[in-house]
Length: 113
Length: 113
Image (cartoon, rainbow over all chains, first blue to last red; front, top):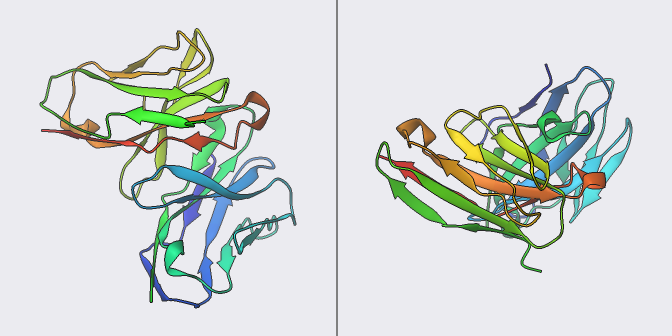
């Protein structure tokens, strides 16, 4: 079945450091891929998405490229801020139904001044 | 717009008690869902609804009931709470044509003793 694997956290970085959070997926077809972010005490928010191979999603300085050959969708940011401290979830969707949306376990990021 | 609202924010129950978690959205979204979030396991779908009067089971439906009498409201009922239901519960909603771009509520943290 479909699945999403993320790098284990927590990840701790200094402000202005480069961020990479790895995400790989297993899917039978051609899924859409997403990154959601959960700030402390809040629900998840869609951060970015990509719907086909080689698409790059971007938002708030974050980027992720849909790599079909490596089944990956790694999240990157060139210079993190303290306000980026949150839990990041990689997700995939294959089909037009809620039960086809699969979330990864989440990666906690802490950015220290 | 208030978006997706959930009540209560926190709840402590004793084993065997019943309760209802409330969820409402004011965006006229057709789709609504309930997830539970447990450490290291990401989000798991409990139940979902594609419109008023229609509900379906997700990945982990046992011990929970839902109903959707209006477009706006989607309550989740715990019939006889068990310690295994200690979790954080999120309600989410989306438009039919943007199924995978879900809007999440702030969550309910439930502890069952």
